[in-house]
Amino acid sequence: MAGKKGTAKGARGKGSKLPVGWILVGIAVLAGVFFLALRGGQQGGTPEEGAIAMRAGNFFFSPKTLTVNVGEEVVLDIRSTGTHTFTIDELGVNVRFGTGKATVRFTPDRPGQFEYYCAIPGHRERGMIGTLTVEEGEGEEG
Ligand SMILES: [Cu+2]
Image 1 (cartoon, rainbow, N blue to C red):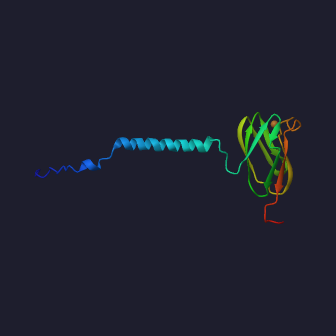
Image 2 (spheres, rainbow, N blue to C red):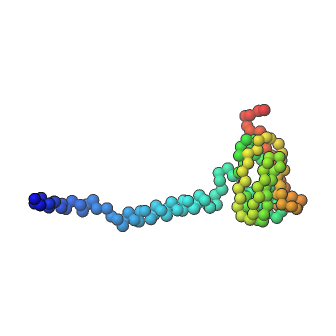
Image 3 (cartoon, helix red, strand yellow):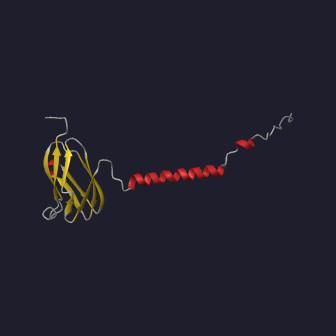
């Protein structure tokens, strides 16, 4: 009844045995690369593609003039010292931010020249203003 239990334990397993140590090393390296890639994407110094770098401080915006296109999203990558706002009344833009980095997004829906300013009391008067020029998109007349 119990005669045929013995199986042939072949010696063929040796060649195909996976080197567990190297697999662990590989996983560790991949995890490290992945982690670094994530960090780079989130807090690296590279701004979003197409973003406009802007500085805000007491009491200025730099640059003081911006030129953009109608219907194209504007992304401002702002570095601020102090609490300020980026405000354009005519376009309904009003974003408040503190010291550090901030992103302002809006899409101008009409051409023209618009003033942007800081809406914190007193800042506009002390020079926190600039001019946004919105141009008609190329090839789209009227
Ligand atoms: Cu301000």
